[in-house]
Length: 130
Image 1 (spheres, rainbow, N blue to C red):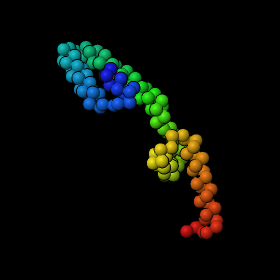
Image 2: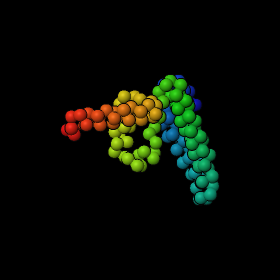
Image 3: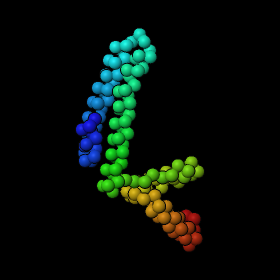
Image 4: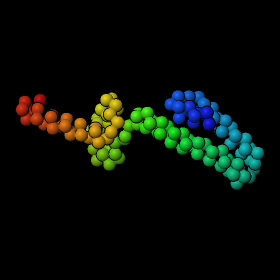
């Protein structure tokens, strides 16, 4: 997992390392739980530490990945949840354009969308709806 964190920081992800670590952690949880099998409290106590370890490493990996994307100028801002809730279909189209054209700033996308809608309204006023 430490090597996976390092490779993520260097922007060279290798998913097999992560999956192997998850598999070994699952085996550790199973073996620890089997060691105290008749006792449910003991089984839970033996499983908590490996799960906590994986959760904290995954949180660190997420943070390292986000920082690596931001420093590499590859971070894309997301579309706000309220926009998705209030207008899902136009928001999907906006999100799709954002991804296709690799626009990273949400404010820039909104500005371009407003300009597009104004241009579309002018074309409709001049040439008709079709």
